[in-house]
Amino acid sequence: MKKETYFGVDVSPLNYEEIIVDLQKRMERNEKSTIIAVNPEKVIKAEENEELKQLINSSTYQIPDGIGILLASKLKGGSISSRVTGVDMMDRLLQFAAQSGYKVFLYGAKEEVVVKAKQNIEAKYPNINISGYENGYVQDVNLVLDKINQAQADLLFVAMGSPKQELWIKENMNKTNVRVFQGVGGSFDVFAG
Ligand code: UDP
Image 1 (cartoon, helix red, strand yellow):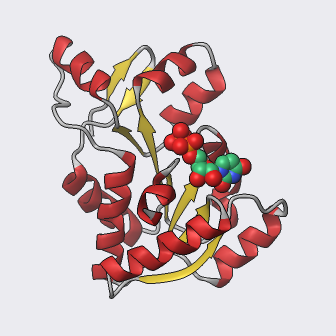
Image 2: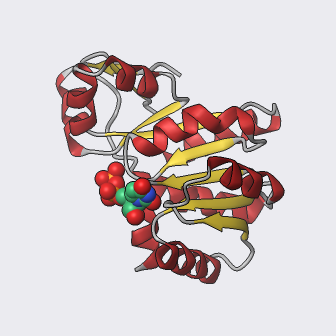
């Protein structure tokens, strides 16, 4: 996949369906994938923060979650013509997990929010297997990792705000058997309604 670069930040040109097709192949090869949402605020922050830039560029998919990226792509003659938002990407992945039998873990937000989000997702996708969840205010990382591994999760959504969630993913992704990681910001609040 040929990425487009804006102020040193890579952006993936794939749409929802293309990401899921690619992701499924990577899962079958047992490769880990990370999804990060890119918007103009992050691009600006990354310009003066090399660590953040590396974090974004080392992700598998940098989704164009913001109208500013579309505009920049159009001006540059690029091919990014539609938004891929973090919350919609999560929703598509939940649907994919429900259809494919992959297990999902929800990590982040306040306890009542993650519980409600789980209930609403289960109501929307009756076949889904949300094999575990944890709120985003637990101090003991090892406890969370144990839960994720016991749940044998295939996809992990981390909702702790950016870049905290992405830093957590980078730090811990190889300590789990999870194959797909997405930092989703306030998306659990959206699913909780
Ligand atoms: N959050 C969390 N742990 C923390 C800080 C934040 O679980 O230590 C949660 C918070 O409850 C909220 C989400 O992270 O559900 C933050 O969403 P926000 O909209 O701020 O993230 P953004 O989309 O702006 O990155």
